[in-house]
Every structure is written in C-alpha cells, then in structure tokens.
Image 1 (tube, rainbow, N blue to C red):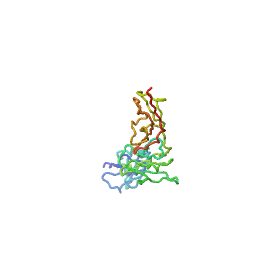
Image 2: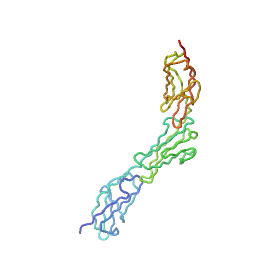
Image 3: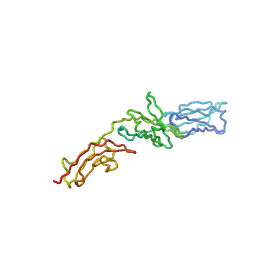
Image 4: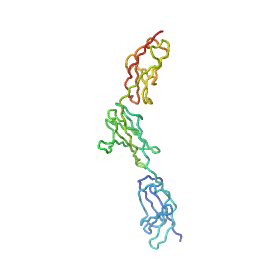
Amino acid sequence: TERPKASLILVPAGQLFIGEVVTLRCDIQGHTDTEWRYSFYKNEYQPFYSEVREYSFSVVESDSGKYTCRGERRSDSQTSEISDAVALTVSALPRATLTVEPESSVFTGESVTLKCEIKGYVGWTYQWYKQAPWGGWTAVSQSVYHTVNRDTLTIRADTVINGDQYWCRGERHDRPTSSQNSSSVTLTVNEKPKPELTSSHKGAALIGNPVVLYCELDQSAGWRFYWSKHTQSPENETKPETHSYTISSVSVSDGGQYWCRAGRGTPVYYTHYSDALWINTTGE
C-alpha cells in the first residue's frame, strides 16, 4: 500500500510575534496519533522529535522559516511521506511612538499633552507610565492631575515638573496583545517667556505714513500673537496672530502705548506681556 502522507498545521497560523507560543501539529491521514512518533523539520533540516503529534514552543525571530513533518510508525519504524511545507514568520512586536505637544520646551504654568501611536495596527488602548521618585516606573491613570483620552495623556499645568519622564505602551485583545514600550521623554520646563516689542520707525511717526511693530520671541514657531493698545486688556486685544502689526497710515489716535504677547495650545497658554512701546505721532 502507499505510504500515508503527513499534514502539518501551525496554530496560530500566519504571522507570529516574538514571545508568542506556536503549536506544530502533525497528522497522518487515516491513522490515529498513537501509532506514530513524529519528526519536525525546519527548512528541510534541523529535525526535532516528539512522542506526540503536537510540539509547542515560544518563538523568536530566528524561528522564521518553512516547517515540515513526518511520522514514524512505532510498530515497524515505517515512515510516512513528508508533509507539505508551511511557512512560519516571526516579527518583532510593533513599537509605540510617543510624541509631545508642545514639541519644544514647556514653560512654567503650561500643560503638556503626550500622544501614543502604533502605526499599522488598530484597536489599541494605551498604558502610561511615569518615573517614580525612587527610580522605578509607576502607572499613570485618569485623575485630577492627568486626563486620559484614548491615545493622549494631558498633564495638568501645575503637575508638569522639569525632568519628569514618561513612556507608553499599547495593549489590545487581538494579536499582538501588546506592543514594545515607547522611548521615554523627559520634560524640560523653562520660565514663562517675555517677548520684545520693537518698531520699524525710530522717533516720532509721521501722520499718514506706515509703521510696523514687531513682537520678537525665541522659538516663535507655533505661537499666535496678540496686541494691546493704550491698556493691557485681553477683551480689547487685536489678534492678527502674526509677529508683526502694521499701521498702514498713522493718525493722531494711533499714538500711545502698545504691548504684545504670544499664546499657543488649547486652552491658550500666554506669555508675559512685552514692555510697553510708545508711539509718538507728528504732522511734520
């Protein structure tokens, strides 16, 4: 009679991730498993043996390859035909990516939002961790100090401390069930900045001529600018949102004190007001 053929099944099938357990199951068509002992092969060599038809192990990346099996009958050492090859692909767990908003240094009194992302996969929930005072890591959850919203963690302004470190990780019910940890980020907190207000015109401004005011701030990317005239009044601020303010044709009423400040984020975090700048007007 023809030799029976072995059939190899991998559970779970398809792509696996480092640390997962795979089971190789070798079936001999038309025969019970107690009749046989089994040989499993990787890439047509490196045999390993099992007294039962299932062989399980925790995978690493080097376990990727094509696997086959065959049986050897216990009663007379007759072997089956070797199975068709089945591919096993082992990949590293996806890594979480942690980003910080604002990207640049944080300033005193400013809140911080961290975002955790795992590209190429869906269905994640995220776990957040903060370096503890004793040097280990402690989980961060929803509280009066931290707001968790799906993939973001917002740290309340008065809880942002220079040198604090955070990292994140993804978890889900599907495979893979967890991600690799993100890199940690260290918060840098600086004193609230104060912009410098300057004018394009030196001396008194001639009525009818243009004047441009400039609100200068280091690392100005991401800031919006707000302008006050005669008094520092948030209700009466002009909001061109650029670092320059143009008076296209100076009139007498344009004379007086001016201030500027910058803001960013939601809710808006404001810098100090600049020092006052006087605009004097003249008809001559």
